[in-house]
Image (cartoon, rainbow, N blue to C red):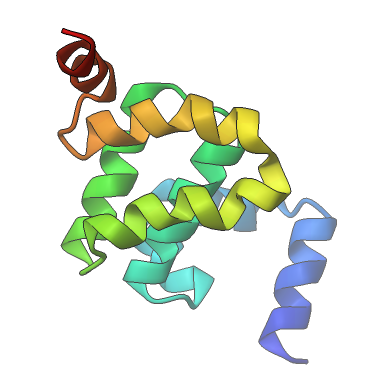
Length: 115
């Protein structure tokens, strides 16, 4: 059986042992996903945007992306890529959180412009 078919079956049946293995360690998750580390990190950032995650959640995903060779522009580009799917409100909410994870305080920048 093709690997992707087996994976779909395991997930659809909620194979708890398989799911636990996927969730156990981030590096194992990256390897088992079959996706390169850079793409994996960008996908995780996109998912965080989609679920309106809290600011600390972005830190490790952004660091993983940077460590895997993603540029700041590519990381911020995930906001644009997911906007048609998740909507403008989610992207507007996520932008400052993503900025903080990249070391840029968007709110502070607004205060400087206003001042």
